Length: 121
Image (cartoon, rainbow, N blue to C red):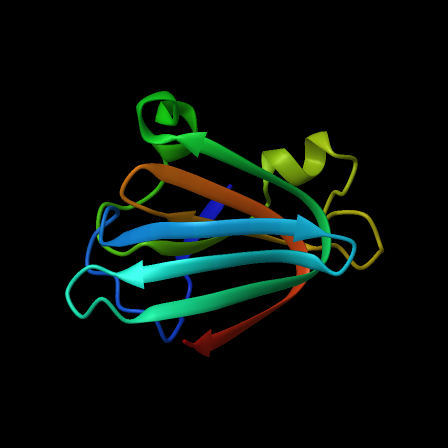
């Protein structure tokens, strides 16, 4: 498993920098509304072609957080054990989704998806 900071337009200086304001899922994908801690700027994070997602409250996210660096709030995981458990191994010769991790004040959101867009609100 390799965890890398994910370059996003949202400010996140540490894992609990941002607040998850809203989450919605439907046939078109997964949408998050995230508010920056310092500026209170809200962002819509839209995931397309979602394979799976999970939301874990902070107090129960110890396993998910073991390999996540304390600095920053947005990460991408390659060689993901979660994707492998879903039957989507990067070692296979096929297009696999990305494994994204969004750290918020009270939740950790993990998303397996092929695309993502950000828009200031």
